[in-house]
Amino acid sequence: MNHFSFSPTPITYLPYFSNKYGVELYVKRDDLFPSALGGSKSRMLQYILYPLVQNGIKTIITAGGPCSNFNRAIALLCAEYGLNLKLVSYTDNPEEYTSSLNNYLVNLTNCQYIYCKKTEVSQTIEKLLKESDELTYFIYGGGKSLEGVYSYFDAVKEVREQYSEDFDEVFIACGTGTTLTGVCAGMQEYFSHVRVHGISVARNWEAEKQVLSEDMSWLNTYLGKSYDFSNLVFHDEYLLGGYGKSSNEQLAVIRECISCAGMIIDPTYVGKAFYGMSSVLSAGDYAGKKILFWNTGGLINLLSSRAI
Image 1 (tube, rainbow, N blue to C red):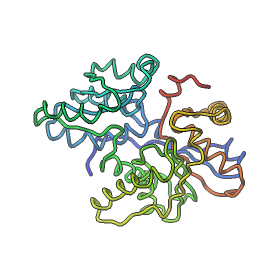
Image 2 (tube, rainbow, N blue to C red; image 1 turned 135 degrees about the horizontal axis):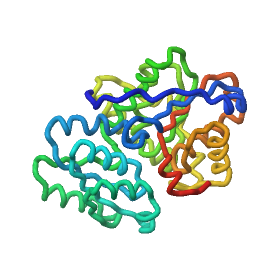
Image 3 (cartoon, rainbow, N blue to C red; image 1 turned 90 degrees about the vertical axis):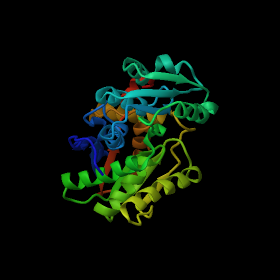
Image 4 (cartoon, rainbow, N blue to C red; image 1 turned 180 degrees about the vertical axis):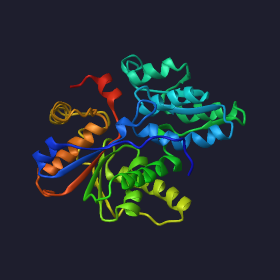
């Protein structure tokens, strides 16, 4: 699958946490992805937007809340590639339009906002599409797509090319499941003995498994493969009350990570995954193991929340 050219993100070693938990802990730094202020959404969009630009698409329609990392990434990349962006925006908390730095950055790109209630998103998008021409394309909010899944299948190949040894366990945040699906499939292809720990930030397993299955079906159909989730350990015990919710213990771990490792993580996504991983590793069951934590980015959310 073709995509825009970009440099690999680094893999770094965390000596403080390695010593604390008796493991070898490495981090795949997608928070340092080299476009649109980094993160997993910026990586996905290199694959999602490439064919659209090549085929002469002029206008993108998508949807998301004002705190969305995806909104920020797609707005910046649309500005870079000369695409018009129509953003269907919704929230139950209007204060987010002023508190969110992601939303502030989207505003600076002069995208066209279409405001609606959460219950009106689908019909608002349908109306926009009916009014559009053939040079307009709809992208599902958050990057949920074959291209999004494939980007993280490809990202595991990037890890394989960077690191010749094997890992034992991988820990990664799971939101919509697009990233997690690509990583699970990629690990089966390039690191066959690795277990993937998906730390859910919003949904329990019953709500997530159907979404994951659909994503994997897209990838298998495209590649002619039969990847599954046999290597997945799904953690829904660290939801902390749901999406965007935190605990004092989680915030303490985030502060520890920033102050002792110099790596910025946020309460909503990566910080919740790092907190979950820390809880798992603290039990001592993985002593001596080689661990990879995947930092999918969250600087802007941390600065917006100022929760620490």
